Length: 126
Image 1: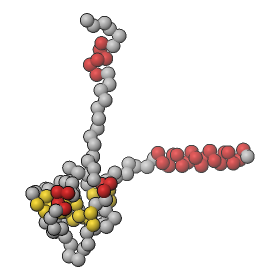
Image 2 (image 1 turned 45 degrees about the vertical axis):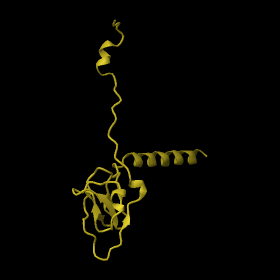
Image 3 (image 1 turned 60 degrees about the vertical axis):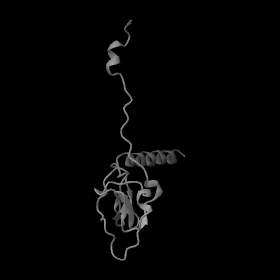
Image 4 (image 1 turned 180 degrees about the vertical axis):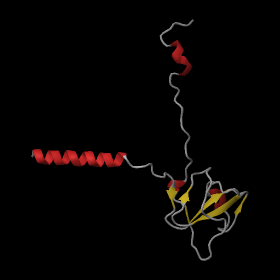
């Protein structure tokens, strides 16, 4: 029994260490097939609804389909698409981005901290 416990502890420690040493993975979505996303003229991603009422080759009101190949990164809303084209490849069949990729990257949130109020900590102010 003691041998099994040592083996289990050693394995758990090795697994934990290997998980902690991994580099941060890319948190963008990756297209698992040829994918069309909606962008503005500069390639900044917009909600697909802005382009859906138009045919796949075009867009409207400053919104255009941008075509990404399989394995390309699908950007968050408001971020620039790269590695694709505003022209669909001849003979390619494009799907839409997964609904889970329809999000905006959130900015870091500042929670305050001590800041200038630290100078008054423990003192009496009227």
